Image (cartoon, rainbow, N blue to C red; front, side):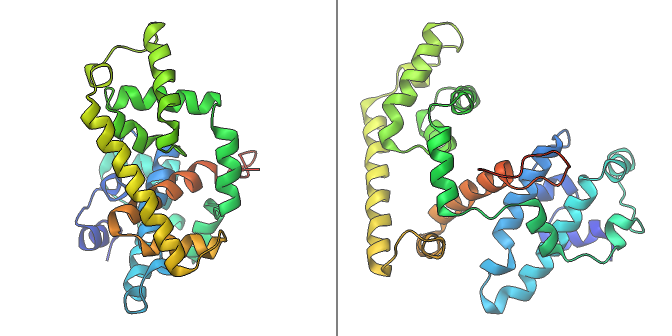
Length: 255
């Protein structure tokens, strides 16, 4: 069975870009992040024993999709003719897809997250991300706070000041959602953050967790599905953005 048909059966989509959740015009890095984000959710290591075989199958299909879209010639063929060369070495070579995945993505540890947060906050990169989030979400602080890495309710005054300064300087437009945000909305966001912090602490105490990598994994697994998805997305962004690069001369990961 060909790759396109496998994608239709497994993911309900025959378009390779749709499988990874990216635009057809996506850059190589965007395709890579899309692959990582989707594959992280079906990784065999995260599946229940009874679901491991199916997770492995889905994981292998995703690996093949990425292998095609990350190969310049194969992607061009697919874009131009809508077909996949099933006989190409990209798909026919004997490959361990989990090893391939690990070559692409560095495993993120608790220390990595802490080190990254220390370097990221108040950096030029964070500043750019905040401004981009403001534009993407037309000033909606709920979505901005969910989008920017490593921020919590304590960072909100700092985030708002950065945005307001950029508005005052004319760098950013003045969106009503930001300028006229109601106290009700602000308080609701604060209450939600405080409740989530309490739930996280309660889960940690109930499970007797510390701060190790296995403890982080157990804590994630103890949360409800929505919060688990958000944490998966965060780890996906971290691993895809700062994981090992396959190209010579690329970044080797966070240091």
